Image (tube, rainbow, N blue to C red; front, top):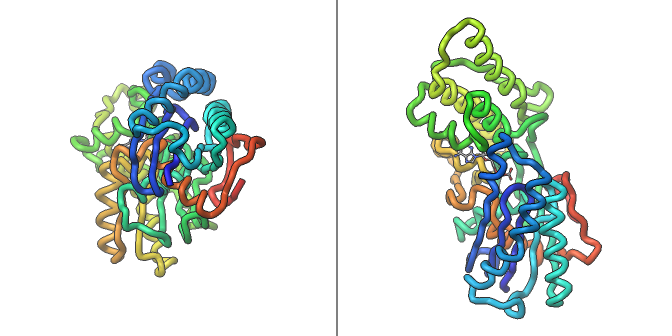
Length: 338
Ligand code: KG4
């Protein structure tokens, strides 16, 4: 079963050919990061335009690299939610056009479900059920993956996502978008104990996250230092901020594992799962809790279409199909189906 998959939810235009949900035959990612950097973040209008410009060539390249024509493809999977609406619509409309022209089934795929599925590619033995911490630029969730298409969210962010907080902190320190990877580098040399940050709690829901207070705290630390004429040691502040974010992620993940002793596998997914501090801390946590940790390979942490092909296979097996009425959606809970 070969799936041609398409991803355009944010600032990467991507296409892939994936066999039986696990075997990536080709994967092409065209990133727009350089164009958004000048503005300090993703500009939705630019993203949509660049997806429209790139999508034909990216899909063509994925087919060529897989040595496939459309006739060799069994289904077309596409990210339809959540994400930037104009960006998503480019992929959805392109996939609808291909599906109609080639008379192939269309499979709508939820973006966060596919981030989780990147682990099925990295770990061919991984099967649900498992607990997954999804940490990306736009989302932070603790999810019980009961089956390939059955999800239960047990913790979520009440405000910003972890990646968003890292990007904002890096920006406040004067680094360009996306700053998460810069903070990762700083943490290699910076002193993570040099600056202290609050440890926000959502009292009534201990598995939920809140990152907006941390974001304000880092901006305040920088402004206060400027006003007093003190020098900020950027490496130390970056390392300390990253530690504060990882502390929160680790604390809630541990609480989720304690509350769900049947979950013997812990999985990480999303762009921030590339972070070396988070990966190391989760290794320790897994050891301490007696669970097996699964990390996506670094090339699959960010947005790509291979993960869409992986999840698309399981959605297809579960009978999910998109019609020519399929629409994109900027917000869509992971539990919900089209
Ligand atoms: O999953 P992703 O590519 O996009 C969404 O679907 O949202 O995640 C992008 C986020 C950005 O916030 C970026 O700064 C962060 O992932 N990121 C990292 C690292 N690499 C990417 N954050 C921390 N450490 C990294 N190594």
